[in-house]
Image (cartoon, rainbow, N blue to C red; front, side, top):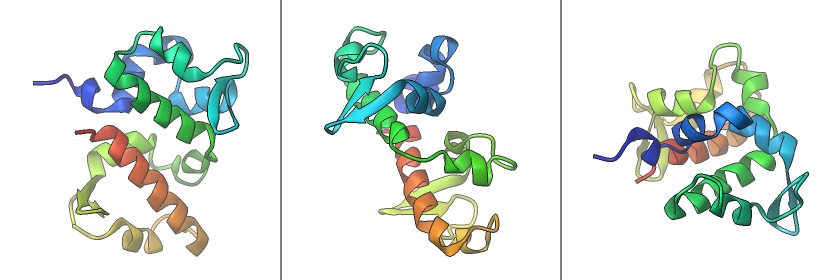
Length: 146
C-alpha cells in the first residue's frame, strides 16, 4: 500500500518540510505572498512552483502542496484563534473526526452535517460557520487524498 504521507498532504509536510520550515500555515503566511494570482516566496521572489520542482517533492506532489500553501497564504489564521484551545491542529481534527457523505462534510461518529454541528459548537458566531465549513472541507480533502 501507499505510505500515509502520500495520501495526506499535512503528514507529507510534517515528514519532509517541518524540520526546516516549521508548520505549513505559519510558513505560508510568513514567507509566501500571492501576486497576480501566483504564489511567490517573499525573499527569493520567484514562482513557488519552480522552487517546489527542485525541492524534495515528486511530480505528483508539487501541485497538491502548492495548492495547500496557496490556500494557507491567503486565509486568516482563524482555526488557531477560535478552536486552538481544544483542537491542536485542523488536519488532526479532519483526520480523526470528519468524513464525507457525497459532497457534504459530516461528523464521523454521528453522521451529523458539520454545518449543523458547528451551530452549537465552540460559541461560533453565525458568520463563522461558513468559513470553518469551507476551511475544514479543504483540509479534509488534503488529508484524505485519493
